[in-house]
Amino acid sequence: VLIWIAIQPSSEPERYPNRFYEFANLKPSEMGDTLAGVFAVLAFVWIIVTVFLQSSELREQRKEVTTTNKHLEKQNFNNFFFELVSTHNSIVEAIDTRKKGGGETIRKGRDCFAGFYRKLEKNVDEKMYPEGVRDGTGDRYKKMYNDHGSDLGHYFRFVYNSMRAIEESPLSEKQHKRLFRALFSDDELLIIFYNIVFGHGKNFITLVESFEFFDNLPKDRLIYPFHKDLLSPKCFGEHS
Image (cartoon, rainbow, N blue to C red):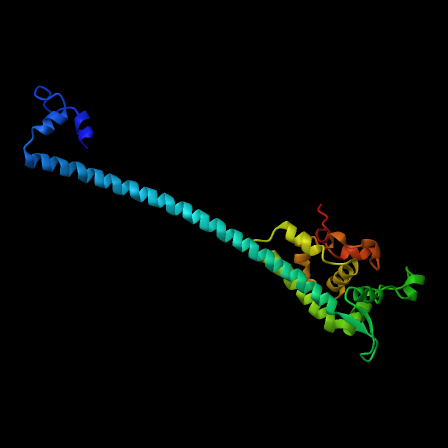
């Protein structure tokens, strides 16, 4: 404070060389008033500085908390995603096909989808007279689903809701869609495709387009090549 006073020009330069000498010759009461005014200004400045420093510190703390929260949210979503993957695999492994009457198990897990697909293949007439016989794939799909709907219904619902959860999450990235898409065998993709085209899977279409879900579909195994044209190119990762 004394240094600050000393460097101030005197209000009476003809009597004092600077403000310090002027201050030193004040009466005690005047000196006290002067110091009180100076300290009041300094206290006010200090309050402003303190508030600024605290605000800056709080901003940094908020940034750290936000970063930590985002990291935890991302980690939680990744854990959720891999739980979906694990549950999907469990559902697939629980599927089985048995001889009529609930007898011996014929197929289990992903092998079942190969059996489901075989039931969609062309009949003898379609193979022998391809030009003159109507496409019976839809009828065969409906019969296959009637035989195995207890397993496939659960399977389709889980796949749909998993895709929807991934699609609607703000934490989802393209890699999550690619990884999810990679879960499915060729036969699974074919059965899901025919569920959308001939079954009850119309609500899949928007999600299938977003995921480009049939990018890896074995198109050469479609019952009829024109079946591919029943869905938009986006479903296959094709863009005009």
